[in-house]
Image 1 (tube, rainbow, N blue to C red):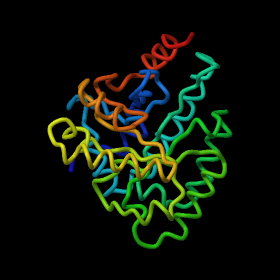
Image 2: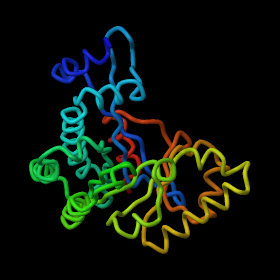
Image 3: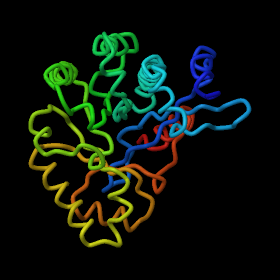
Image 4: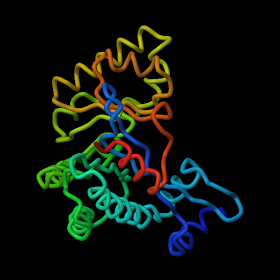
Length: 256
């Protein structure tokens, strides 16, 4: 209850921070993008996990304003990365909640943030959850189509854990599947899971979808995913979430 009441004042006071976890090309290890991850350094509790405060923000409705701050901050910080390595500008991936996506004017806000920041549309990926695609979908389809028509990429986060349905992948115009960490965790010790992951990757290839594997922590996981045809991944094996300063240093270090 205390955390819930502190959310809005913390947002107003500028207490939240963004960290960026690198997304890499598995074959080369080169950073292709960063996922923006929200952090709350609390004055008395220390670093509060998003697992704790994001559900509270959803329940209270603060998630819409909080999500708008994340989008604004991530887009503007990512726009400044272009000068670090003009020949290879990483994209930024921003999570969007169901409530935020349904908020009036969300698509227009995305366009406005891109215009104000100067970030090219193809350098922004919006990560949505599978539950957004369940039920009445006509307006959702239209909004996603409008975003993608502008060049913005759309990704399905935590694929395989929620309302997975092959039918919506045919109907929904998306670009990327984020393969949930639960698949990655078991790919080494379970032949069945390995075959399932390979099947997901083959299906994605047939639908011209990119796959990013989440939560890669070991070289064995890295090797099996690469051999199975997964192009991209993120996880502690490559880097923990970085501050903007450290993300910029990583981009500079990889520049030719």
